[in-house]
Image (cartoon, rainbow, N blue to C red; front, side):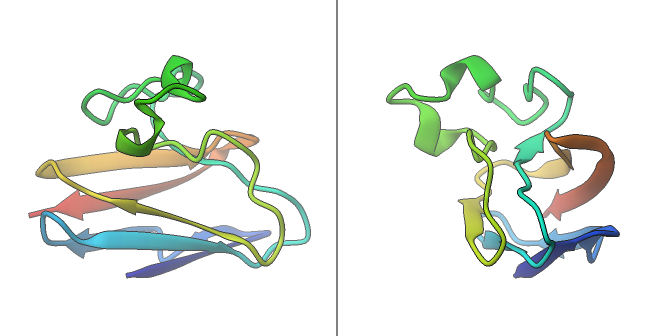
Length: 102
């Protein structure tokens, strides 16, 4: 599943996937973006996620890019938990989306 990020935010804003699917977000904006689980600024809505786990051995398992993603770069995450997972751009917290995992 591919989600793009541009000056208007995430597109599409909502996607539905199966447990174990990977979602990739590509930056098509003119600036950096930082996809992460809600709630801003802790990023702890997705199970076991937390911004304080960035730069630790747990980082691959959290829904958080843990860094700005430059224009043209991408970030991907495999969803292991069923639910409706809201996320945002940590650099512009008003830019939001939802991944629904069945």
